[in-house]
Image (tube, rainbow, N blue to C red; front, top):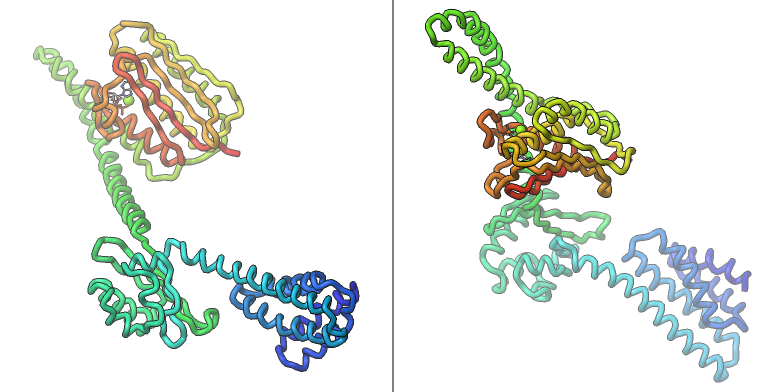
Length: 457
Ligand code: ADP
Ligand code: MG
């Protein structure tokens, strides 16, 4: 038995490699040794050897090899039968063996069909033309694109397809254009826009890998197109941002000198009884400076300077920074954290600014209640899957839906002395860190901001 197995593989492999009749004599030789062995065992050995052989080839090649291997097996069986007297039991064995062979062939066909099935249900449209230019296969998606039942066009060449009355004129025009661009002009890719607005990418594959067949695949790339366009838009915005930043920077210098000269003029205005004017000018200049400062902070084109740090230690620092101001405003800021080891990779200065912005907004929202209740601001850090969630919750005046919807717009503010930049800047910073911000609020109840930052694993 073991001896047969040993000889079987090289003999079969040689036959499959050469495919000539001379190599079949080994099958005859082996067949003579098979006396007393069960057909199951022979088939098992055959299967085992074939599996080794087909492991190295593509699936349709495997089907061919498999079919060829049956000739070897039949030869073997014939030799086996000749050795024995044709009594009933061998006859029966022979039938059994044949059935098993059928079975094994069928299971192989099923594997092949599985691949066909995959092709069938791919999200790209697929059409296969053979080397004579005859359509031999189209999948469901392609049939959908052409708006015909799958079987309609099988066996047609390109001329017949273009004349087919089941295909509408628009589709025909597209087919003709694709045919010209890919087959006649030998382009491997062709991109077009369907009259209904979808962008389609047509890919053609042919050559040795396909035995002379032409594989046409059509993919809907509208989504990618959209992403590309957004990226372009973002580039433009980034450019504008840079110009604006340069202008803002340039405005700061003259503002500083104006501020200086107004201060020099102040005593003279005082004499004229117009000190009020100086005050207004100075506060307005300070406001302009604030806006520029926040804007410049937000539009720094440089990438964030990241370092690994425990988010809780950063929050602790921010809470400390706001302590004196919150005391002044009759507020309590408390830090809650259940895990100390929440490490994030961030630009510390930028993220600190975000948390500070949020806490300051909370302080403002509490102040706007005019001492109605003691202010309470909770800063909470906890793990949320791959993210750390930082919550800043206050019992301030809250906000309505309209305010909520415009919250992150640059220059949107409801405060007299506000810049309306805090949240838009914070949003940008967190997005640049691969995170996100969420907000929930109830008028007169309070507000909760959630900042998500990716954890370092
Ligand atoms: P600014 O603080 O300069 O007004 P922001 O961008 O920081 O600009 O905030 C925009 C607006 O969002 C604020 O004017 C306020 O109306 C609202 N807002 C932000 N945070 C809160 C909060 N915690 N509670 C209530 N309203 C808030
Ligand atoms: Mg603010």
